[in-house]
Length: 333
Length: 273
Image 1 (cartoon, each protein chain N blue to C red):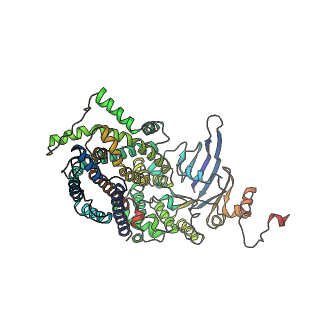
Image 2 (image 1 turned 90 degrees about the horizontal axis):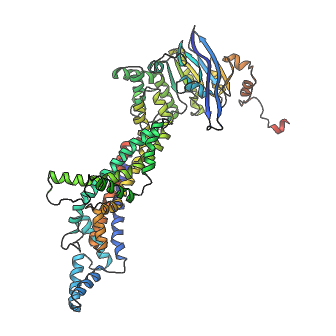
């Protein structure tokens, strides 16, 4: 019963978060004093050297409002927005790349961002925890404290400095990776997939290095505390080996806060995407967001932000649904 | 007659502080106890907090290495100089019961896994034999395997969990069970269940106990021998009736006097003056 209740509660929260997120994305741009259609008409008017008559403008305005879903009062707009987004995932066309639909642009970029950031976050989590566990479990040994130094040295370096250093070293000084990577488009072949993976390695290495240090430090602190717990000593007296004690007792018991930390860091994946994708000219959601923001492409902004909200909420949901598997206290309440 | 427990000049020194002002703490200061008997016994170790009781238990469980001296359990040297006993054989000879069963068992692991693993790792049984041994051990502490199987620590009461840890300690058929304050975390009404269980296991199953406690009442009730410790030293040692009935050392008398009784009237120091 405990699990069903837990899952139902979490699903309820999930949908509530999505609903609030969608509402906020809808409302915030409408609080701006400017109207995108006014801006757009202004641009056309400027290009036509003011040749458009008042009648033409009214006609154009009606057409654009229809096209961009800006017809009627705020409530009507809101309802039609929810209907389109929830049932069709339709954000209308992009202003910049008219008539290409926003959903198409977003869905092309999404696998890149998810692939790169999720995979590197998971690898950083895994490696960091392994190193942190060993450093924490053997904290009385001198060699283990060297492992911790890795974390202490990596953690405080600002991400952008780390990224620029990695670019300098690995594509300029030792040119293993291209300085200006190209990402092939169109039908996916094995060769293209290989190229994408090769070009993604550099940003991935940077992201792993950046996430790695924090995981070492936090796991080490947890492991040191857990190693002192009576149940670890007790397991030794029932014949558990060093390896079993480290994995089955210390890691197993120190893991839960780290899983929560993983959920939180997956939540920030999209904000991390912005910087990474700009620095490595990586064709993901972050790059799209930036282009859209600088050219006031509202629909693309909506689309990219909405997909980020959905992805982050879903990642959190998945982690929370794994929890009962990890924590018997949720299962047997 | 066999030597049930013998400590020979056992010392344990902890260092505290850095290079400049390091301080030595003698947690065990030349502890000499010899208990010889034909039948299994309960040896109570009493003393206030910090008297070295737990260090003695840890040393006998090989969780701490003595700075000098040695300890013998049932004619075998278990720790200190001259130890030849392998880790595996040691765990078959001496088994622990910890103070707080909720801390002793990991909360992410079903408790019966502990019993199974003890049977397989320490007693060297096969899977099917282990099943039987676990059921038998649980039965001897008054529990049913079917009610324990697959459950986690949060599904038991403290008393039940402590009985399970007694059952676990019994599985490899150890000769000595070191119980470090096994009833201090259990409410008074349930304490006697555990205490009587020790007595029953001593008389029927032939297990000896080293019962570490600060509760003189239960120590007197159950034990054959009493060791009184203070500041790392054994201040009094002997047969339980003798020590309790005719305490020789001032510290033992102090301990005995500090037990609240219902027959004496409580006098505040002011009224006494």
